[in-house]
Image (tube, rainbow, N blue to C red; front, side, top):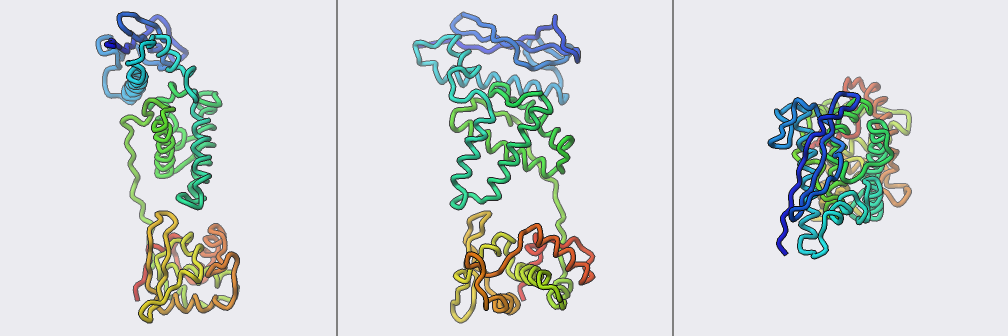
Length: 353
């Protein structure tokens, strides 16, 4: 069945909101018939509207955001049309019902986010870490708080989830939420993962991140010199908790393993091949197999803690990451190291001798 389909936008210039902006309205044409789908909920400065292109003129932030949102709506409607174009019952009412969500399993975004998080929860311990679940749980809370803060709404309709919403969320993260720039970018990347999940399952019929580019600013995490590392390693510490944290930190400096990977080590990960001892493990973050030759200092640290059995059969009695980093700051003061000592720094101080 051959059909003709068209999406059209026009400006309702005889109406203005409190900000003096007019709403962009939506019309859909099918086989010579036309239906008004109402407001797109996109408000623009009427002086920027181009009646010929049905888009905003120029490349201001407002124009780019509004045009991207209109493109997203147009793409969504065209996707609906192509989904049903061979259906003899295709009509403007059917397109409208699917567009507003009446004929879809999900009509708003947060229930999809909840489903995504439940899927993540089921994969924890297999292909996903607890940290990833925590990341998406916090992101879901931030996005819900943003919707209330910005729009006074507890959820957002799928058709309303346009690129302008992504831009508003980006601004919210860096201002009201007080996130650093790179933190905001990482949260947006995580949100895009959720929207891709929704698109692949047919819940979301457009891309809210259309034309959105991510850019992380380079971060200088610093490093310790060999002299500073050995000063920490050789320091006499009378407090057991500081001694333990110091030992595990030095172990990481000599193996390059992250905090979580050291925490997961058991005696079974220590393997002897050709009279040499190796750590054979899998990095939790990437699931990549890693083999690390044990040098004298990390071997002596393993021996130091080998006389006891620790919880869950672990190699070391690791403290929490938060406590570990707090105690590392004490250790830095005691050793006269004038740097921000964190466990993450150990990964950037790998020693090969």
